[in-house]
Image 1 (cartoon, rainbow, N blue to C red):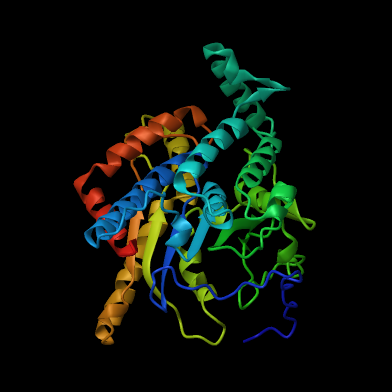
Image 2 (cartoon, rainbow, N blue to C red; image 1 turned 60 degrees about the vertical axis):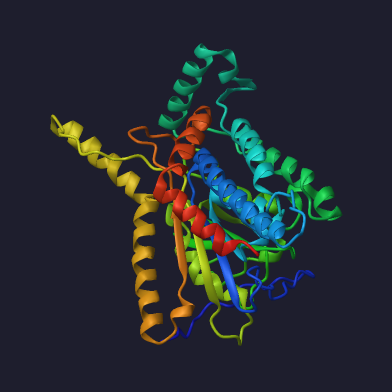
Length: 411
């Protein structure tokens, strides 16, 4: 039953940013593809290594078909924005979605920018001194300084380097002259080849807010007091990037139009449900539910947890506490829930006589074995790449990459 005191509708975009209903990237009139990107700090480099491998295989398949037809191969890198109709990301995944869909970057450029961003944002500093630049002693001092800041309740890192990195990326890969001039102050809402959103969490309210680069047929409706009047059309790229990545204790919370935001990973570290639920943004308000052909979900690595025997009460307490914290941002649990629901969804399609309307779901998430990598440990990024490349050589993973690429390729 609707409340008699229902809040007013959230403001719809007021500037000239009306988003047209996108033409499906699949080449078919009503078939769409969706990309979902987990949160995980610097571990997002693993997602990009996987996506780059997938796009490389798409390129190889398409060029093989071109040559077979007597046409020259196309040497250009394949951009995910040309194959996925909707991108959803949380935290680091939100920043990646921003680069891939709002700025229409290719994987090679995103990886290079991501490496630069991680080093800039997550270097521990004492004043203006970057401690890690002082060699091994600096690394030791930097890590201890971060621990001290966490204990006394200070954010471990400044948000200013992130804002600086966003300015750099937008100015280097602008969609137009306005982006080039405004940099991170350019509006997030702008028509581009692809639609994307970043998950953020409304601080003190526990409500998920989706920050889109497009104006959906039905405006998003925040329900928390004070959030109902958010003017999404006025949110800048820099504000959205800060909001999706403001992990508590790591970065200062972001403020947009007087509202405070935390990292979207607090509620949706794996945004697969949000990606699926918002598929209706791909069609008009009066259109039937869109057919999603392929969903690709990319994780940011995970360790293989092993059961250990706790020697005493204190050890058992802290082990339980660490597991509880880990479960709060567990992306694999959400994946298993979604996979089960998707299997049920597809079985219903078959039972209803629509086997051709099943949705393919691919989840890629590399293991780091017994090694647990912190979300700010940018010095471990080369190791993450190595773990991911080893994961991609596994026969079952290579098979999934091949199948997925064949479904995405335009031949």
